Image (cartoon, rainbow, N blue to C red; front, side):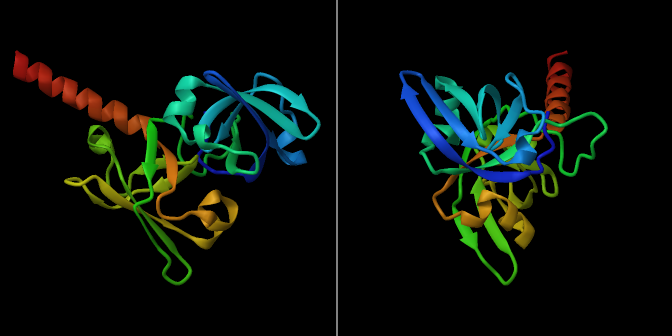
Length: 206
């Protein structure tokens, strides 16, 4: 599990592609390497990945075909910068919201505004997921726990408002229209909504 609070942005140091597999290394600092072991889970742009090898200041990961197809990890190049978060520990404050790292898909930035001291990004979520998204609810974008604003249920469009600190500490400071980001809906919301829909369907079928 992760908290949706990105703790660093780090570059892809090496990348090898094979049929159905991409093996890559991320250059980390001492804080993110401390206690890190092979088999540990790390959130990379919101995707839960497993450490396969540790080599100096580099942590290595393998991404399978499905991960490459469904997430932005398929677009990585050497030098690409990604959001990183180590897995949550028991008793540690959850500053964002619980996330699994099991990404639902990708969203494109369809609009970007930069009013003074702010950045406003607009996305459009696929119809199959609109039932799980609510104004002032949670959504994870590239591993960042963010608040849904200005949601239009009819079109699926919504905005997120980013403060300077978020822009400084994440890859959103480099965002531009057309960029794709990984998204994960709030699992607690999904369970509640699916339970309600299942109950309603059962009543109608009774």
